[in-house]
Amino acid sequence: MNLLEDIPQDLVNFLLVTLFSLIIGLEQRRHHETEKIKYLFGTDRTFALIGILGFILYVLDKDRLWLFAGGGAVVTVFLTVAYAGKVRMEGQFGMTSVIVALTTYCLAPLIYTQPPWLTLLILITILVLVEIKEVLIEFSEKFNKNEFITLAKFIAIAGVILPLTPHDQIIEDLNLTPYNFWLAVVAVSAISYVSYLLKKFVFPRAGLFLTGVLGGLYSSTATTFTLARKTASAGYPVILTAASILVATAMMYLRILVLAFLFNPSLGSRLLVPLLVLAAASAGVASYFYWRSRKEEPADDPQTDAPQRNPLEFPTALLFALLFVVFAALTHYVLRFYGQSGLNVLSLIVGVTDIDPFLLNLFQDKQTFAEHLVVLATIQATLSNNFLKAVYGAVLGVPGMRKYLLTGFGIILGVSILILLIS
Image (cartoon, helix red, strand yellow):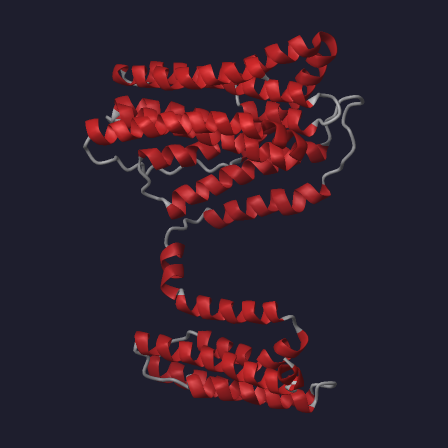
């Protein structure tokens, strides 16, 4: 232990610079040999020497850094000459190796001035970025012209508009502020956007069951509506479609639980067991039907390659905003004039619409509503929404699917009622 403490720090840093530079150079050699590039300005030894040069010039003049800056300028000139030769001989304009070489030259000040985790993270990032060129090309080919606009919209609503939104109440005695309103929009949009990205870029050819999982993150009601219609228009297998609709409902419970913890961790703890039980019941029934479909419907799982609607479209956001404001006012006045019984009735009525705006109002209002009332209202809202989905599926789907949907949703509704009775 004393021996390690006696090792000069400059020696340790020199060894680290040499090792990291050599690793980067070895990666460059492997990368160039794989791509069969004929013209190289250097690989392992060259990159190691570039790192060592940066170390020498840095330690000789740590205070003013004139030597380090001058050496960087000289290295840049040599790299420019090498780059020009590459362009002239091969007609290729890629600058990855040049940028990597300049980064290697900067390893010494990084190791001396920054925490070890940051230097290692930079090293890891360099190695990964150079190696995933083909992956990035394949990934970019999946983008259409609107994807970056969509990303810009999400960054704008989450990172620009939200921090600038005021916290003042709009109406006296009504716990509705522009910030709470927009925070709810951001939270639901984030979950929907993640589901959209998974469906489009990670699972673009998702089968029915996986479509139910991803669709439940976005909207279990919309997923039920779409898949039920597909049994008639596209001939989707009935048992597998029923399983997909039910697993979307299981994901709905998990989505609600995430939102509860996000806005009210104490309430999330109260909802944890009931919602996990309901999610498990839904997933259990869905898994049983999925297992039966493997035996009774041996045909291949149809691929659902129709793109999911972009969750950040302005009409969708405006509709959610309108529902959020309406339910905020409606819930406030119903509770004021009709008390708990009015809230119970309202929680059952909202199941015919999007229940997220109603629930987010309950989750954010920590002073008006007792937690046990919010728990009951949440279960009741999901119960009425599940009843509506059962009706949707039975009416829109083929007759052969009705018994599976009614059985599955019947079990979920029964569990919901049991939880309400013992709560």
